[in-house]
Amino acid sequence: MFGLGTAELVLIFVIILILFGPGKLPELGSGLGKAIRNSKKVTSDTAIDVTPENGKEATESKPLK
Image 1: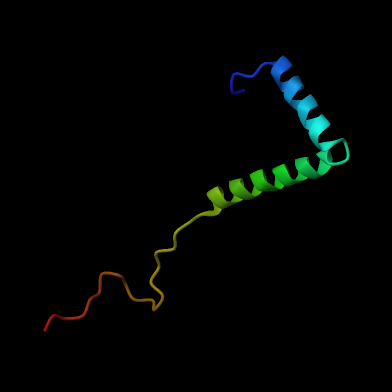
Image 2: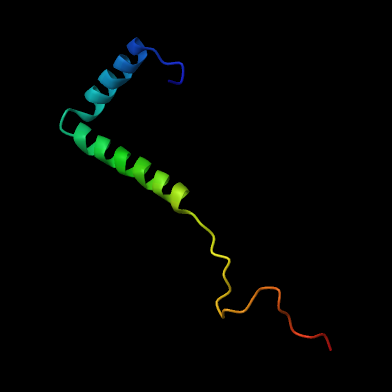
């Protein structure tokens, strides 16, 4: 995981715990989870609708003058 070992991850977690305190960690985790969930939803739900609005085929065109 990004070249980080167990010791590095524990050190990062301890620093975050010291900075934010144990009361803020659930809120941070919840916000991070929502952000990841929304980004996955946006990337998987993107579909382009190419159907013309008026029901005519896109190949129809006006005659040239």
